[in-house]
Amino acid sequence: MSRNLIHNPILRGFHPDPSICRAGDDYYIATSTFEWFPGVRIHHSRDLVNWRPLTYALTRSSQLNMEGDLDSGGIWAPCLTYDNGLFYLIYTDVKSRQGAFKDTPNYLVTAENIEGPWSEPVYLNSSGFDPSLFHDEDGRKWLVNMLWDHRTGRNSFAGIVLQEYSVEEQRLVGPVTPIYKGTELALTEGPHLYRKDGWYYLITAEGGTQYDHAVTVARAKQIEGPYETAPVNPLLTSAGNPELPLQKAGHASLVETQTGEWYMVHLCGRPVKDKYCNLGRETAIQRVEFTADGWLALSGGGNAPALTVEGPDLPAHPFAAAAPRDDFEAPQLDVRWSTLRVPADESWLSLQERPGYLRLKGRESMSSMHRQSLVALRQQAFRCSAETSVDFEPQHFQQMAGLIVYYDTKDYLYLRITHDEVLGGRTLGLIRSKDGVYEDTLTPEIPLPAGVSVSLKVIIDGEFAQFYYKVSESTWEKIGPALEIYHLSDDFPAYIRFTGTFIGICAQDLSGTLHPADFDYFEYLEQE
Image 1 (cartoon, rainbow, N blue to C red):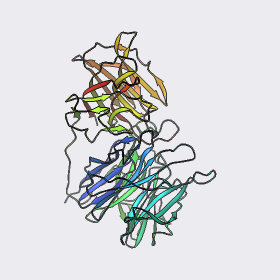
Image 2 (tube, rainbow, N blue to C red):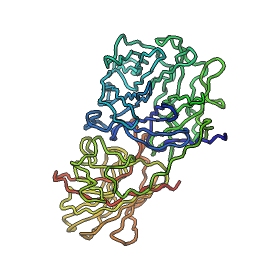
Image 3 (tube, one colour):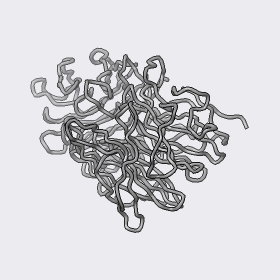
């Protein structure tokens, strides 16, 4: 059987902190979703080459209540495992990450079917983030997570700790045991445990989740340790090699195929300009092997992430490509869509009130961390376009709706329709927020006729976005200059953020009357 090549990244756009598992002939990757709802996106493959977004695990407010969660809070680093017919998902819902403290409650949900229903959450602990669950050969289960130390003068990343999980009692039991302090790379996090040939292997992320990121391996004969770091370390990194197309390589997990081959998924970033990664942190995969002395190594040698990787000895299993256009004719949102912090429910979003349209009822502003009416999908290519058509008749300047390119509450570009009492009716204009600085004077307000649909479009080319509009069946017209979008990235400004760029539609009604906007379709096309 000829082997197919895997082309990295396998999950393009915002898909960080991958956790991979196999159930029979099926492979699943769970990734972090942070403040985007539903929580924990799950992709599916049968050959490790072709992947499709399949489902989300956390679809109910009882499983995940992120209303008020800060930017880049919410779901961090899930861990998906499978044991004896049951899927286990461990996740953190980060409530605070500013200053010395981090509030990081960790939970467990389970499901017999990967597509759900997933159980109500079991609370585990809050001692740190990046928890994962290990199923040992004797049937015992163990939680590992990094320990956060808030004290002045101490290492905040205080090492990896281990504690047993009791399935019968649905809680952690027994002592909390520190098992690994990390290496000189520091910032030790993202632990995953594996067992092979009598060894326990501990995979950790080190160096921070930016350009010094790395994957470290340690091993021990007993699960409590002592763990010895691999003599050749790190296993994987892009640090010190700015010419590599895949940067930020780190935060990995392992999977063994049905044929005994081993692969490692990891996050990465691809800069669009300088060190700005507009697409966010993505997921790549590398082929790995165990050496004669029992250590893990990249197949082919070295420790740099590769763009192309030899696929496993499995039959090819491609999936049909997703339709680029959503006409909003289905009874529920497609799996590609996400909302901010809260579920899509009838109180603010409807696909039935006007069949063939997505109706958004205007709610809070783009700065809100509570109840935004925003629906968006990931930007997954450096060159792409998105367009929509909207019926919207605002009665007041506090009512807005349109097309948004969004990173978080501080950074976005927004082509919006509103009402201007001086100009006497509907107008169209651009809003930009850059590091929280609001601007709505990038272009003069353009008067729009009442009672007709308005089409809105954005074309993204690398670090620039150009907006367009047309009224009814007229031709597309540019609005404003091509705007730089490098600020829509994890790497801007100096503080650390963790999500990628989304493109979507939204509506605001700051007066509180839930004034609606009806979107006829949304089309997302990639030019690469």
